[in-house]
Length: 400
Image 1 (cartoon, rainbow, N blue to C red):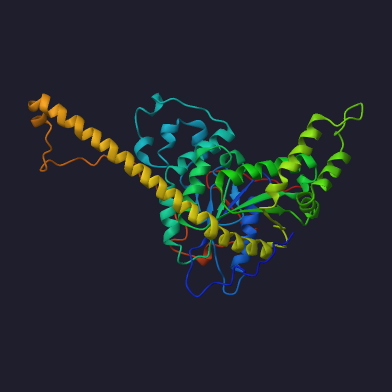
Image 2: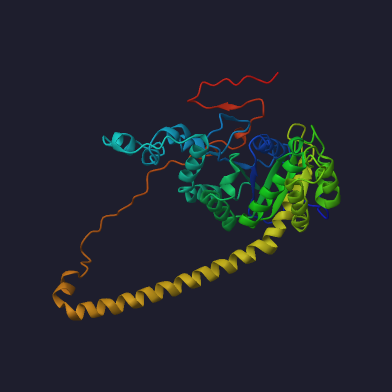
């Protein structure tokens, strides 16, 4: 399904430089997010003139990426140490101050599993996300798009605090669009399709950002059936009724069948506010339509999300200022009463302006690496040149 009323493309830049659009790719593991990022990266490089995006990899456990990221979480957080070592040690983020601590062996070890390690690594990286934003904002004048590749652990964006921090922080600084990547061949079953739609609905209402459904791998299976199910709930119910396992031994609809029928009616309103595009990350089909949808979603961000963000920020600042004034007023009253009752103590706690205060900076010296610092256009590589991890001697066999 091609978005309607869309005319602008990624190469149609206005005379005055606008802020770059941030594309956050989210999706299930195996949906093809990284390959999709590489495809849109390649598409932007192929424009005339080339428009290289600024790419961030936020997946700490990926062995290799089909693109060269400008900022890579693996340069900052060691996923394997997160799984094995104590979180306090991992907070070193490759600094030597904690590594060489003689008491490190006394700290507890959590022995996290793969999913817990990924979540914890992203949580640690999020604590320094303000530094990432500073670097991205410095590059804002030289790029049109900023692309975030995220882990397949989709719960990061459904309930984890790090997902909310990332989306809120980025969206408060730059126009932001969420691209939800769907594995089209694996969504042909009505139950799997409904599961994907429920995840998409959850992320949409949690982030409250412009949302694009990207049906990936359309070279394997066209996404027409999914568009039909979204536009006509009766078509989905007919597909559900014909699917195996939707009736019991007596021919009556099962509980799951009835539940999905009800949810299809509930989500009918949800579908009306979504843009859906079909894309093949292998052939590049549909990428142009995707960027048209991104440009339309940027307009939606500026029209709907940005005013709401400003209202929420003003309301929050007003509430915080009122709380500060109230707390300060109560503190001064208590302090005046205490000084009246104990004049000697009041003299002892007077501030000495000549005394030097120590700067208690608990922040660790984290090195967020910007790989585009020296070379810009040379950062691009094609899908056949994948950068392996330096600390892993893995050679993944090719299928077949």
